[in-house]
Image 1 (cartoon, one colour):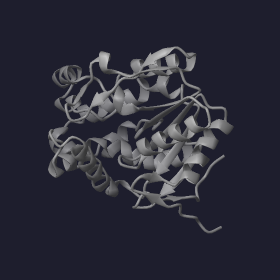
Image 2: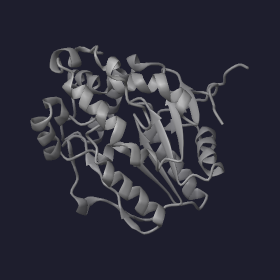
Image 3: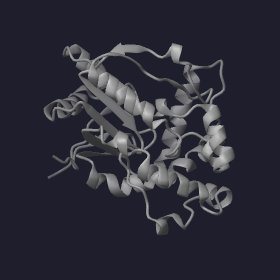
Image 4: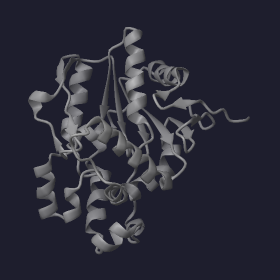
Length: 275
């Protein structure tokens, strides 16, 4: 059967595509619907579009990002001093407050007033709790993130560095083993709350630096008075994500309940859809 490519504009995905994803969540009676994909895939955009469409249908849908559950700056600095300097950089498994994520999802599903954490990526710190928006429960919670339900690697797979960051700054493998252990154990309670997983499968990790740089340019345009990351900083930053990103590309097409391939322009190609 020939594949079909759905258009995607700079404003987001086509409404018919968004509707099909929302229908997927509703048809399977999900309380928490997960969207995984490489950095820059468009997970946040798709989540926001699903929320807007659901509101027009009279549904209360709240979108969360795994990024909003990063540990605060000082907490990560402490990890950097105690475990390994690379632990101070947000992003890799081990740098999130999993207990907070579980508590927020549970509160939303219970229907009570819930404060939604927010992380300031330019300041590299969590916003004060008094600045978190409060919502009154949700019929559906969407959680998007780049490594949702990705399985940990074996000890043998951790031996060889995957990039210059690991080769030069994690020579003994302490950081990647610490992060892999967190992925294997710490995130299980969160994964258990995810009823169904959609994987937006990008064409390969090689596209991530370009996509992530586009994200940073957008962030800078929204905050011209502040300094976002430079191109060189983005190139280094994505190396923190490379190992687990490649693991996601290897494993999630088989583990996710639904997988949709994307081309280099992030256009969905409907050819790998599970049931």
